[in-house]
Image 1 (spheres, rainbow, N blue to C red):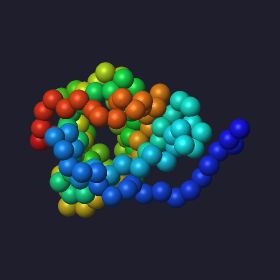
Image 2 (image 1 turned 135 degrees about the vertical axis):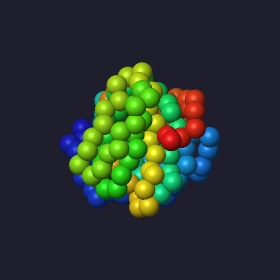
Image 3 (image 1 turned 90 degrees about the vertical axis):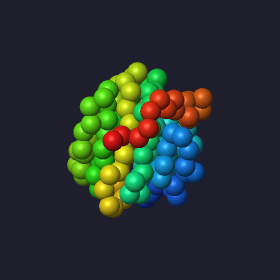
Image 4 (image 1 turned 60 degrees about the vertical axis):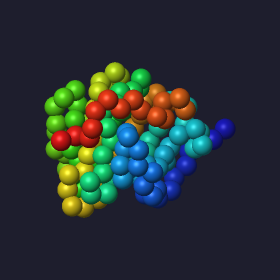
Length: 130
């Protein structure tokens, strides 16, 4: 049985831009490969101008801002988060994220239960946070 794992991690290079995201980097640091069964922990980042279109999950997602400023839209209301702030998106709540600043924004993201492979692509319904 696995007893745990530890290592320093940053988000990977940005994913290819699509209709649902732009300048998004994401690196899972705790998930099935590390022996997790119920929880996924990831580092996310946006370069300036990056965004993730409105989407909804079948799992809870909590984020904690590490550096920079993040515009987080939850159910139509925009929140401006900075380092040390957090957000919670409950199951079935529409949300979007964007970096309106001039520097990179980085955050930790916890998903419980962890996302399933079929949930890797989110359902976008609108352009990025305004």
